Length: 316
Image (cartoon, rainbow, N blue to C red):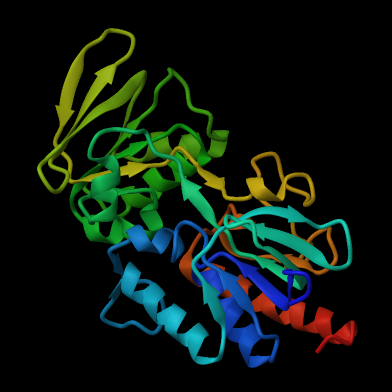
């Protein structure tokens, strides 16, 4: 440490599957990684109860426990995990500068971004509580749809994501109610066709969810037609909010190339960004798959890319 500024070989920002996996690989490659957890330690899996689709857990596992396992594995190989948040970066030079929420300045030879993305919610009472305790509210049909086999569910949204979620759930659930705020969808034509052709998907036009019913789990959804004012209760056990995700990439400002929705753009088949020595993995750069296993895969890729970069520079 010089003049109060710490210098590290590899800085990892984010503590979801991508960040912890990057840490495991970086630590084993003697890159002495320092990982900053950010405000949501463990990422989106911390609000996921039963995880049954991650390889290696044949009986399933609770999301928080899985992330604790990831953390312990990263620590086992020597990752320095710090409970703090990166609030500012400067990627203008060959050595990358970052600042924590405690105003500590750190210089890094390589940076792996694994800040993830956050689901957008409607802001209804009980929504966040039920999402966190496995009470029937979810933002990922692929993750949680399996638990609603043969049941009735609601999907909120009108874009491609909502259409995909509704179509996916229609193959598992008895009935799917899709709530669309307007009299048309924003989804692509082909996705709209799939929704409208599905016999067990009912599209409720000009309709919004106004209340989640149930004490500790979803027992119904009160909806309202925003044209007529009429309301009704849909007897469902699952409530899927599919109005999009927001990548947690604001702190990177204009340093990194992003797409129109804020996801970091990486080079084809790599985790490299437009800034040399800065790599992106997980949901911060993946708006397509958004699964724990794919996030972990890109975390591995980012660490390997960073290792090659540091070796070429003669740093390791």
